Length: 53
View 1 (spheres, one colour):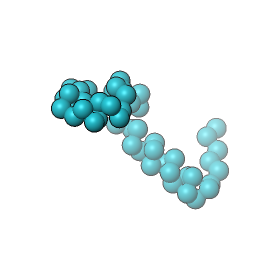
View 2 (cartoon, helix red, strand yellow):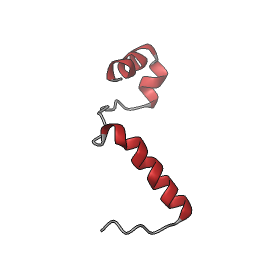
View 3 (tube, helix red, strand yellow):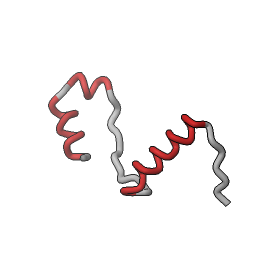
View 4 (cartoon, helix red, strand yellow):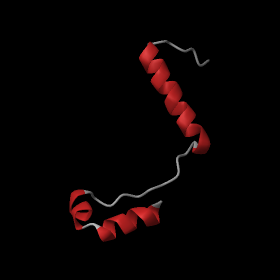
């Protein structure tokens, strides 16, 4: 992913001028990150309180 991002920056002067370089890292939650994001969106949309204790 980082290599592809750098190739895009190298090939596009507009991209270089418009966007600052970024550091791309794997999510701390790895494969679960998408599920956690989906749960957050659902809870936000429904406005439900969840007791995590």
